[in-house]
Length: 287
Ligand code: SF4
Ligand code: SF4
Image (cartoon, rainbow, N blue to C red):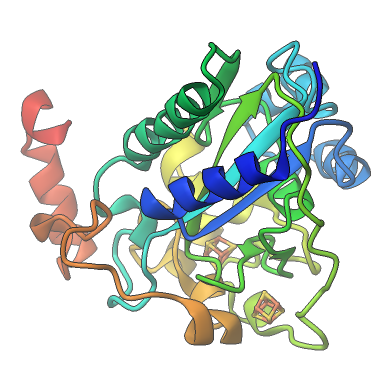
């Protein structure tokens, strides 16, 4: 298949911003540059009980050409979920509509746009935190931002309060320039601020100590020594993002019609009261 013209990428980028994305780029699929870090992370058991990240799941993540055979490039996008609202008890990313659903539909619209422009079907697959992909590696390669020492991808346009999504395509698009700069410098604010010691070194997340893992992934009881430090926070905490100077500078106010605005019943409710409300819900209310 021949290469698509640069004007197609520019049109796609305009389409992405029109759909509400805050960052856009294209990466050629291949072996992730962070593969050695990923392997060392697994080897050290930093993934806790998340067995799906190991074995066959790890094998797929070691080469981005594997999850969707035939795909050669990824269109990578990021969407802000704010960052200026009060924090806690539920992490900001989890307070609004389900980002998997919202963003998958937007990414599918990028696919439809491509097919309309080219006038023929294109094999493609959307991923929104839903496949065996090292998303931040891909986003860095697509020029969206750099890896902060808090292990988040920091985008110059919206900070690190962003969701990442991608469309894997069997189409030769022109890759964007990778984001090579590391703008963390000597700062260690995120490492110092993590309440559970889940950031033992720059760009190393001990998931087994992170509040996100402890309140979503862990099926056993929460280890006693970590309970007090968790402070009643749920679905993760925003602390390692809140302390980052780049978020103070780049994070965005959510618009009135953003699907990621907090649902009213999650807004400013103490975690104990929220837990009682959730325990009293039936399935329709919960979903
Ligand atoms: S989300 Fe909270 S617990 Fe997890 S690494 Fe960041 S500061 Fe630590
Ligand atoms: S708080 Fe400092 S070290 Fe951490 S991600 Fe932000 S700039 Fe980098």
